Length: 183
Image (tube, rainbow, N blue to C red):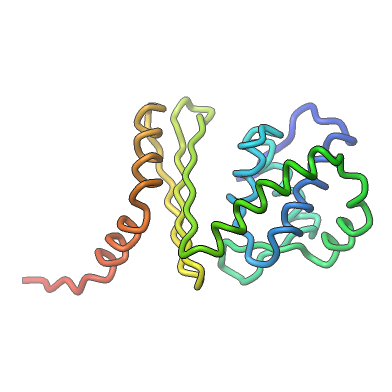
C-alpha cells in the first residue's frame, strides 16, 4: 500500500525525514519499522499515514533499506547515513533530546529478554487496525495484523498482548508446529 502526503511543505517534509533518519541512525542495524512509527506516534509528530508515507518515500529514495531480503528489519543506506551525518546539526535540540529519551527506552527494551509492542488506529473505512509485535533478542519475531470494528475491542487486545505477549507467542508457535495426524 502506498501512502501519499497531503499538504506538507518541503521544509516540514525535510525536517520529518531528518528526524526519521536520526531515529534509524541511533537505533542501529535491524530496526523494525514499527519501532520508528511508535516513536513518531507517541510524540505526536505525525499520524500513522503521514509517517508511513515518509518511510515509503525514504525507502524509494534509498535512504533506508531492508537489512535482509524478506525480513522486516531496516537500516540506513549509505545515502541515508551520508544525509544524517551532513544535516544532523539541523535537528532542533528539543526534538533531539525528546527522541534520545525514546530511543534509550527502546534500546533498553531490546537489551532485555524480549521486545513487544502493540498499537491500533482507525482506518478510512471506519474499522480499527491493530498491530502486535514480539521479538526476542536472538531475532525470533512475530507480527500480527488484525482488524476490529471497535476501539474498545482494539484496546482490550492491545492490553492483553502487552500483558501476555510471551505466553501468546509460545502458544502460537506451539500451535503452528503441531504434528497433526489425520484419521
